[in-house]
Image 1 (cartoon, rainbow, N blue to C red):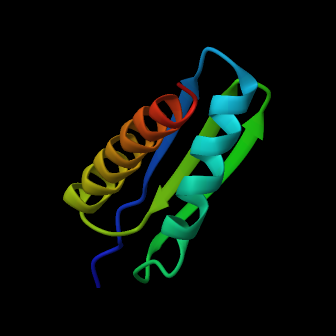
Image 2 (cartoon, helix red, strand yellow):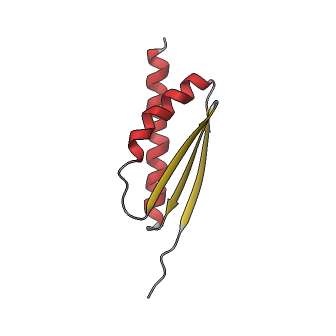
Length: 86
C-alpha cells in the first residue's frame, strides 16, 4: 500500500496595524471550515501578524490551491477594510 505524502506550510502575513490584521483574520476564519478530508488549516492572530499553518495529506496541488485561496482572500479582505476606513 502506498503511503500518503504529507505537506505542511507556514504562512505569515504582517499588516501595517493590528486593526487591519484583526479584520482580515476575522474575515478568513469562516473559510477554514469545512475542509476536505486530509486538509487542516489553523490561524493565529499575533498583533499585526496572522500566522497560518496548513497540514495536507492530499496532492501537492491541494496545498498550493489552499495557500492561494488564503492569500487571495486576505488581499480582498485587506482592500475592503482599507476602503471602509476611508
